[in-house]
Length: 343
Ligand SMILES: [Mn+2]
Image (cartoon, rainbow, N blue to C red; front, top):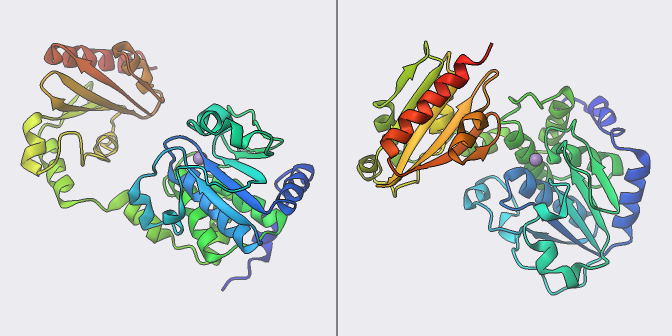
């Protein structure tokens, strides 16, 4: 194995020493620690909580990993400890809360309202990487340079000299891989890769995360993709591409309407030259769900908000109701106008 001392060294001095010391003191004086993730938890929220719980358990602490919503069962395939996740507060004394992957108490579903009495007065360490986060704990470790909360926790564990182990490393690598889509997104830095390197040296296996997360799909979904690609169209010199899933396609592929189509919008936006990719999904006679993906300077929300939807610049959605045929034409015209408005 390649000696990692340089990597370990680079990862040991990233968090403010004052904050690291305060966090370590809170952890040391606590016997029982509650780790929580945000509403509709993604693998970064869950992997961060499970990963830190593995490290803190080895450090001698009793840990509970609580999520405000039932996590996607598919994540069990690559997250050790998944079965230990609880969605109700345990009936135990708690000394410390560590809130992960969101910087505002309201982002943790109903945890702080439903359990306001039980959680009152328990100190909170808040660890997050979102640029908009203010932090709501007594100790706030917020670093928007981190591509994932799991990257920040890798630094945290390293700097506080908490015990890293194979399970912790696997959970944290899952958080980093999913928040960067396998180290692809702009947020990925040299430090992100160093964190990944350290986690792999502890036994985390990238393929065991990447394959189930991004590549494996059901036979029925592959059949649906085949049907959808027959409807693929382009306009605006190939800058606008779209496709649709009609009502009968779900049945032909053996799927419930609205299921098994994950990844199709991303597939469409990867057509070379596409700036806006749209997938229309008819799930009943009177409504069409629309997924918009963009590249370059296009903003998906500039299109979806015109139709009462929302989302992010790269991925957004809306629902078309009423005369869905006419609404589809309107949305395509809005997309073409948005593309034409880019310089
Ligand atoms: Mn995250």
